[in-house]
Image (cartoon, rainbow, N blue to C red; front, side, top):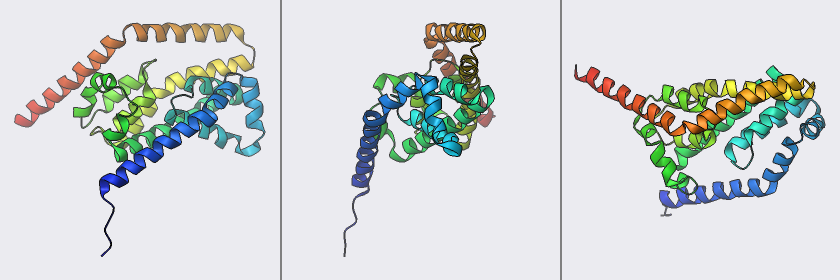
Length: 241
């Protein structure tokens, strides 16, 4: 009778293959995509080469940048606004980022903690440990994804090993990401139209919000953790009553 390959071996092979794929994409395409996104004019011309399929190519880039941390998402969002305008650029970015976040969530759910600990620092797990005890952390995810400067792509992976349900994560993270995506797309669209005043105002507001979020990052994480514990405590009391 043929012996089956142990589940642990299959799991380990899957982890190695996926990590190898991420490393290959990072080395082969990461720098190239980043360089193009830094020049919106060049990026728009690149997309136009694909004609009616340019939107699918852009969405694929946005999906990829969630999975590969080396590709800066904000630059792609700005380039999307430059290429398609504020609302269309934001919409296409949102689709790609939502797909990428969903893929990251399910990859982590399938491969588990042994996969994540290979590239996520232990301090990050400790910082967001309150996510792991929540069965319905939709509000917590919304808060964290709404705040600028948080490692949202890493959080997409981390959410996959929590008890959070996939539909809750997708809805919450997508809704929270939209304001930031819209601002980046707005800046890109006005850059294309050479509306320098609008670009400076929007960029200044974005920088101020980002700096404030960076300064109060620990407090915001702590507040979200306290909110999570208070919700859990209230839920336990309700069950007892």
